[in-house]
Structure formats: C-alpha cells, structure tokens
Amino acid sequence: LRDLGEPAEILVEDNARLANLIGRGIADRGFVSDQVASLRHASDALREASFDAIILDLGLPDGDALAWLSAERGRADFPPVMILTARDALGDRIAGLDAGADDYLIKPVEIDELAARLRALLRRPGNRSAPVIRIGDLQFDTATRVVRRCGAAIELSRRETDLLELLMRRAGAVVHRDAIVDALYHFN
Ligand code: CA
Image (tube, rainbow, N blue to C red; front, side):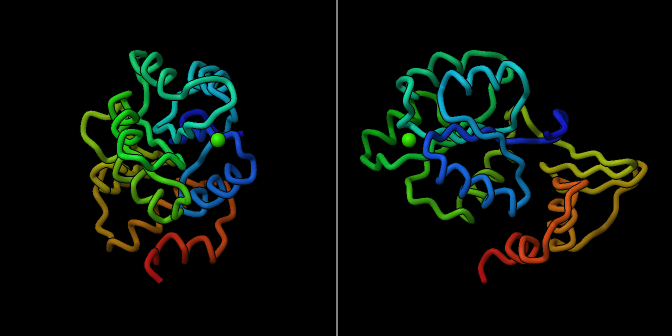
C-alpha cells in the first residue's frame, strides 16, 4: 500500500490488461498509481485519498464518464484529469475538454508521451498539487524542480535532478536499472 502522503495518480480503466500495462509503464517513469475499473470505485477512491491526477478511460461499464466528470468536478480538491480513450473524433475531444478534462490522449498511447503530459499537468499553476516530495531532510519541489536539504538549495544537473526525483518518488522500493534508463533517456 502506498503512503497516502505521497503523490499518486488514479487510473480509471476497465481493461485490466491495459490498466496493468499503463500502471507499470508510468511506474517505471516515477509515478505511483492506484487502479480502479469503474466510476463508482473512482468516486470511492477520491473520497478516501487525495490524488495528483486522474487518468480516465471514457468507455467504462457503469456510466457516462463525461457526465461523471462534470458532476464530480465541482468537488473541492478535485485533481486534474487526463482522458485516455479510443474515441478520436474532434467532437469527442471537444466534449471531453468541455466536461472539464485538462488533457486528452488517444489510444493506443505511448507511455513516454503519457508520462510527459502527466508531468506537464502537474506543473500547471493553479492545480491543487504543486507537490513537494519530502524524505527525511530532503525536499524536492516538483513544480520548480528545486532540491533542498535542511532548507538549503542543492545544485544538480538536469539528469541528476530527474534521477533524484525518480528515486524519491519510489523511496523504499528497489528501482531497477532498466527503469532508470527508461526514465532518464526518453528518446533512446
Ligand atoms: Ca474501457
């Protein structure tokens, strides 16, 4: 179980194989995600924990995801939403954004692009989450990418910063070399 204080995404996707693929893919890129397969479970999860972002499939078994989004969005602390769907018509994209989504990705999705867009979503000013990851006396501000130890800023190269973020997001877990290489070298 994740520590409820750490930044996490919620993935709402009823295709178990795809959900696992996306969950593992973004985990390799430093994101922690909880997976649910229905709108009802998404509502339950959002009541029980706070999330930095929602990754939302539109074709879910228990209702219209856009109607759900419009209804839930008014809630305080509602996180930014990335719609992930096979519906690629212009009208669908507009309806999704109008319903309150912050971004829209068409399946099949490239995990690197999804991760990059999630990072962009989390960086946006005005989003509830300008998450600062804290471990011991180390603080990582994911919005400004400033690292502090005991309050003093530490200078790191861009890749060192990326590596530190990855390790801090997955603190306590073993991070395999392949996952680090994938996360740091997105473009081969
Ligand atoms: Ca689906």
